[in-house]
Length: 137
Image (cartoon, rainbow, N blue to C red; front, side, top):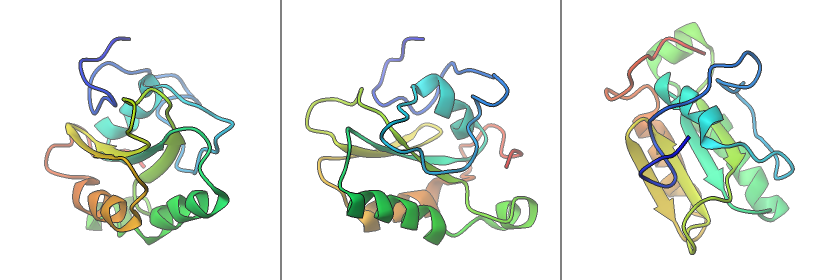
């Protein structure tokens, strides 16, 4: 699949049981996933935190903390019981961009890790009004 923007925030994606959409979890650096996997989550209202390479253990923990601290929308809280935020390694970002957050048709690109910006993005855009199908947990 080819995309016009990197990291992509919408477009073609996979629909493969157990592989896409992804289950809600932190995907460690040993598990690099392509956009075709996590874009399906974006279509259903998720915010995906992306990181390049292998960040420090502290940053990996902070990414997991964002997942835990993100406030679910009322609909997600009622239906899912948790926020719709996952984190995954993606080395395909432009040089100089080591972190990003994406939601359907939205992207935040960061040269350095910034927990507050990533958390604010996740809170603002998960299940946002731009989401085509906000019905999946």
